[in-house]
Amino acid sequence: MFPKLISFGDFFLPTYGVLVALAFLAGLQLTAKLAKRSGYNPETVTNLAIYCALSGLAGAKLLMFAFDWRYYAAKPADIFSISTLQAAGVYQGGLVLAVVFAWLYVRHHKLPFFGVADAFAPGVALGHAIGRIGCFAAGCCWGSQCDRPWAVTFTDPEAAKLVGVPLNVPLHPAQLYESTAEFVLSYFLYRQFLKKHGEGQIIGLYLILYSIIRIAVEFVRNHEQALPFGLPFSLTQWIAAGTLIVGVWWYLRARTVSR
Image (tube, rainbow, N blue to C red; front, side, top):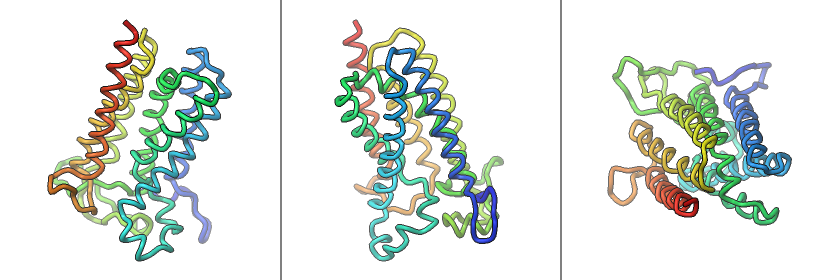
């Protein structure tokens, strides 16, 4: 759609990268605000956010490599290519690794894991919403073929070159579906955070609702990987089902403890 924000010869500033940076800053600002409201040290939480962002990027790329291991095993040089750098990766891989790192970090600093996670949830949803707009601009994570009036058609050869999106084919704007849902989710979680809640209730709601969003959006996403277990669900949907179960567990736990 608009993969390059600025170009100077062979150098270009990717729109996706700029929007991801803005997404991180917006999510960080919201998280710091909620952390301060909860009585946590904003600097400690800000440092955690930076570490989680780095581990999240690593986790998303690692799971992407795992999904496409046959391709990258045959072409290992592509691991360091521009197209791989532009690719968003698999979000759940980043989420899982970031959560693991956060758990270790808060234990080291003697902070309540679920309380800190609650402060993060609205900001994570906000950052993800903005990041998906970056995906749309780059052309990655594109949808399946679509005959609806709101279908989008990518025509920029640079987008096809960078991320492989098919050109001149009407597609579901899957990135925008998810982005819109994430903006709504961020606002909903923010409003819930301002109300009385048990520790872990907000992050539980995030995992429940985001998992449902992801499962739904995946039905209109393009999938190059084979569907596992002989069922009409992608591997990403199975992962989302797992995070949904974890979210329900955390949410019920929070409600039980807060009584």
